[in-house]
Image 1 (spheres, rainbow, N blue to C red):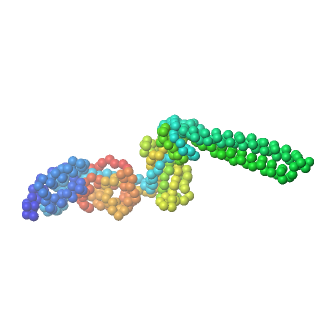
Image 2 (image 1 turned 180 degrees about the horizontal axis):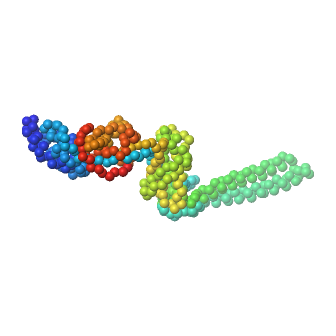
Image 3 (image 1 turned 30 degrees about the horizontal axis):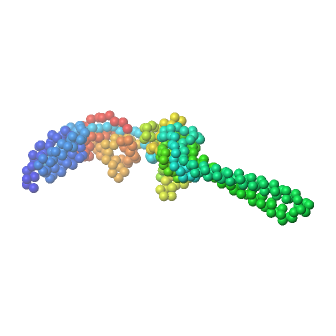
Length: 407
């Protein structure tokens, strides 16, 4: 401790000029620690120079006359400090949500009924397709052969049904002359009806087989663009496998999930400001629809906004930032963010009046874009200390240097 006590006067002399050049709250705390406990050789000066290099010039004048640590007494010489003026600026609460840009229509194209190898894929991402246009084909030779076999069986049964129906008609004509019994006539009619039922069953099988054959040619279900290609020729595709995905974005849907306590703020036709991260565009749109209930797990309400995009300039499945003002604008005073210290919902600032800095505490209403909005009891037009306030105490004399600032 004796060695450290001997080093303190030398430390104060060596570092006074450095502190006069650049000083903020962190530097003041470092000074107090070093002055109280001393420093290891070569450590304190390096740390303070590092802070000076990354810090900003606060234009604090007269630090040498501020206080002499040996006596810790105030001086009557005024401190230099940067000061700005308050502005009268109404404040309104704002909600921000993160949403997703979704296409108006989206479809994953693949087989629904057959399993087969992919034969051809005719499009790639970015291609524009029309409704009914062929997208890909599958190797379905087995399905085609089965369809042809069922078709041939159906034709054979149809011929037998026709012959059986004709025979039943002839036997029926002999019943009037008592040449045949009623039992024979009934058997012939039953045989003809049986043949007809078999033909109907084969025709149904043929329809199902035809659907399988048609499933081997994959077509676009609507006008749109190819978003993804997930299959290539030679891949084995099963029902449910996606080969190509198509989106229609002539209208995009911006979707978001908002907290349940904002349900009343997101009613349909409410105007919302939208910022697209993908292309940096900003625009306004109205809420098109709102879910009537919240999600059971997340307790959020789903909303959607429809945005016309005939030029297809908005990429889908990207991020959108939504913001909207809620409630009514209330009177407020705007001050720079650097001018206040917030604690317990109150903002404390140094207000300069007649060359003297006084601490004023006001209710904090909100913060936005580097600006605090406080209760209007803090009168607009007053000077508030923005630089060098870490040095001040209530009642200190200051020399304020006006600086330009607007919220």
